[in-house]
Length: 164
Length: 287
Ligand SMILES: Cc1cc2nc3c(=O)[nH]c(=O)nc-3n(C[C@H](O)[C@H](O)[C@H](O)COP(=O)(O)OP(=O)(O)OC[C@H]3O[C@@H](n4cnc5c(N)ncnc54)[C@H](O)[C@@H]3O)c2cc1C
Ligand code: FES
Ligand code: FES
Picture 1 (tube, rainbow over the protein chains, first blue to last red):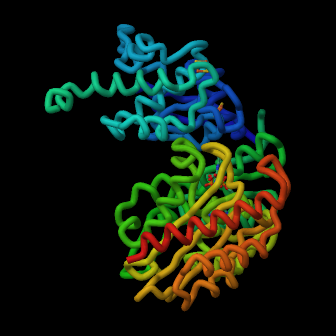
Picture 2 (picture 1 turned 90 degrees about the horizontal axis):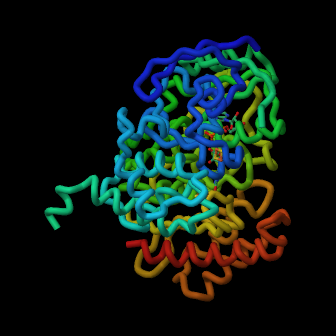
C-alpha cells in the first residue's frame, strides 16, 4: 500500500503530492494543500458541500480518491474571486440577496452554480433548482439561493439583457 | 470515514485490465465512477485490496449508433447519456431515465457500466436494459461472452459476471421509430433510490399494441422483467381495463424489501401505479 505520486493543476497552479491510494480528494485538498474552501458536510455523497470542478465538471470530492484525479484539472472555490480579492458576481449576489445564513453549504453551492452558469448561461428558475439539486442547504430554504444565482446570471449576461 | 488500504492500478487497455484482475485474484475490484463502490468502501462494507481503475481505457467510452444497433461503452457516464442528441433521436428513454438518477455531480462520475454491473436492486439502468432487451458484453481471461440483461441478475449483488470479467458494453436494437416509452420513478427526494419504478417500451399501430416490454426497479432483490404484464398489453387496444390488468400482473411478481421507503405492500402498490403511469405516458408518446 505504498504512496503514489500525483500531479494536478489546481486553480491554475501545477501541484505535486504523494498520497496513499485511499486518500479521498477532499482530504488531499483540505489537509495536504490547505484548500479548506470545499467543506465536508455529510461525508456520504449527498450534501454537495465538497463540490469542486474536475476537468470542467462538478463533482463531489468526498467520493473520489485523489489518485483518480491524478493528471486532472481542478477548480475550487478559492479561485472564483479575482486574484485581488474582488468577489465574483455570484459571490456578490449571494451576499446581496441573502443566499446564505450559516454559510456552510456556500462554497459548494457557489462552485456548483459557477459551473452551471458556464454550461447554461441563462437558466430558468427550475433549471437552477434542478442544477443545484445535489447541494443541500439547511438554512435558507433555497429561495434566496435561486434568486442570487438568477440575478448573477443576469449580470453576467449584459448582452442578453439588452436584447430583451 | 476512511476506506481500508488498497493498491491502485490504472491500466490503459481492456487486455491489461483483465491481466491485472487475473494476477491479483479475488481481492481486486474494478472501479468505474466509484459512486457505488467508494461509499461502500467508506463504510468498510467493501474492503478490496486492489482497485483497478478503468478511466484510461478509451475503448470503454462512448455511444455508437449503427443503423438501429446501439452500443454503449461501459465507462459512458450518466451525464453523457443525458447530453447525447444522437441517442435522444433514436432511444430517448435512456437519457430521460438517467436524468432521474441521483444529482448532477453524481451523474458526472457514475457510469452505465457501474450502474448495471453493480447488482444493487436500487439501480435504475438494469430495468431499462431489460425493457430494451439489451445484451451485456463481458470480457474475461477466457474471451468474450454475451449475456442478456434479462438473464444477468441472480440476487442482490449477485450477477452473471464471473471473477476476472469486465463488462465492456451494453448493446441493444433501438425500438422502431414512433415507439412509446417511459420510465416512471417514485422517490422520496432527489438523490434517493426508487420506492418503485417502471420502464415501459411499446409500439402501437391502428390503436393496437404491437410490441411491449415492462420492467421494474427496486421491488425485488433483482430488477424484474415483467413478461406476463408485457404479454397482456401485446395485441390489446390498451384500454383502461388492459392497463390495470398489466399493472396487477406486474405487482404479482414483486417482492420488495421493507425499509425506510415503506412497508412491502406499499411499495408493491406504488409499483402498480408506476406501471400504469408509464404505460399511459408511453401511449401518449407513441406515434
Ligand atoms: C447520492 C447518490 C445517489 C444515487 N442515486 C442513484 C439512483 O437514484 N439510481 C441509481 O441507479 N443509482 C444511484 N446512485 C448510484 C450511482 O448511479 C452509481 O454511479 C452507479 O450505481 C455505479 O456506477 P459507477 O460508475 O459509479 O460504478 P462503481 O461505483 O465504480 O462500481 C460499482 C460496482 O460495479 C463494478 N463495476 C463497475 N464497472 C464495471 C465494469 N465495467 N465491469 C465490471 N464491473 C464493474 C465495481 O467493481 C463495483 O462493484 C447514487 C449514488 C449516490 C452517491
Ligand atoms: S461531503 Fe461530499 S457530498 Fe457531503
Ligand atoms: S447557509 Fe447554512 S447550510 Fe446553507
